[in-house]
Structures are given as structure tokens and as C-alpha cells.
Length: 282
Image (cartoon, rainbow, N blue to C red; front, side):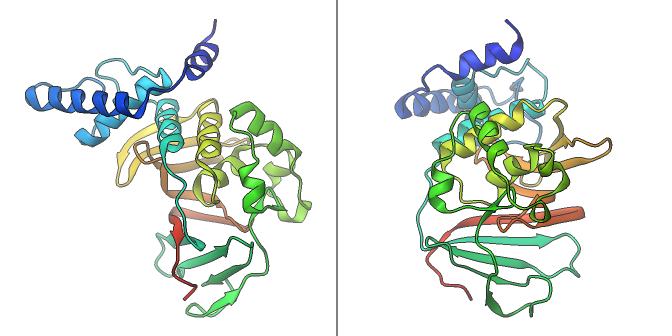
């Protein structure tokens, strides 16, 4: 049986109970405190004990084992994030709030608020006054097609089924990137883990689908998590992504399919912050 089939078998095993996860985390932290001078072999450089404990729990949940002394691979980071995403509550609020900040300070910050009825407001979009909230022209989008919160809830929680469903979604060519027109699932999967209000089990499936992408590379610990390189369909076309495997949050990227279906890119990074809020657009 090849590696991916082995991993798939492990992933089908039931996850441990919350009590077992807590006990495992406490045991790991107790051992780490009792052996302060001994290096933990699989600890990713730059990560603290809390992250180490979460990574250990992710090993239990996903079956991913990193050899002693070796940094986590890109695939392993994404699988750890998948385990964290599935355990993270979806949250609640009146509006789904997204904030983007470019490393180039000359580009204004962009914000959006989406109500549960699909109505959206934005601030700082190109062509709009940077300090004025305006009604958005579009609602949430995935692969060029409008999607509702209910549509996102209905997406499959299995990685292969999710990619198959994404292949069926087709908006107008003018609203899709070239790779999306070729049914490449990379950018829709990126949208599901970065900007869209995706349910926990679907985010987990998206992370696992990305983990199966050939050539994913972890370049090391940076502010906000681990920096990953994900190759694109064209040579030299790669996406940089900073993921915190403990929280499953995507904090920065250089290429983004936004929640409203647009394309945002940067020679540096785009910082992304998302979450539910009861604060109205302002």
C-alpha cells in the first residue's frame, strides 16, 4: 500500500475524545517541563511548547509522524492544520468580516462584511474611497459562482469528494482565473481555507486536499506559523502561504482568490484576518 493510501487509512480512524486529547497534551507538557535540557526531536524550530503539544495531538489524530530531528514537511503542516480545523468551533456573529493588508503600505487596506442573508459591504476596494463603506456589487463567490452560507455548509467533508464538487462549480469564464477554467482546484481550495466562512469539517477537507498536492514545501517557521510553497500548474507559478498548524489560520499569502471572487496578488505578502463579528460595517 502506498503512502497516501496508508495515510487515508489512518485518517479514517476515529479521532480521540476531547478528554484523551487533553490528557495527551498535559502528558507532553509535563514531560517537556521535566526534561528542559533535552531537545524534543520533532519540535519545529521557532514553535513553543503549546504548539508542540498541539502537534503531538495532531499526530494522534492524523497518524502523521515526523522522524526525530526532522522539521515538519509541507504535507505534515497541512495535515496538522486539517486536524486543528476540524476541532475548531465555527463561531457566531452577525457579519463575516475579512480584512486584507498588503506588505506594500501604499496599497490601502481592504475590508468586507457579509451578512448571513448574503448582503455585503466593502471598504477600500479599488475605485472606492478608502474610508467609506459601500454596498458590494457581488456576494460570496467560489470559482466564479455565487455561493451562500448554506452552499458552503453543503460542501463535502471528504477531500476527493470536495475536489469533485469544486470541478462541478462553474461561473462565467470572465469571473474565473485561467487555472480555475482548467478545473485546477488549487485556488478554490485556497479560498476555502483563507477567506470564505467555511464550516470546520469542510476546511479540514480542503487542508487535506492541499496536503495531497505534489511538491508542497515547508520553508520554515516565520511570524504567524509555517511558510509553505505550493507549486502551481505553470512552471515558476507558486503560492506562498503562512499557516499556523495549531489554529489552522492562514495569516499571509502572496496570491489570493478573494471571498468575492477577485484575484489579489503581491510580490511580498497579503495579511489576511477573518472572523465573525456583531459590529456593523464601519
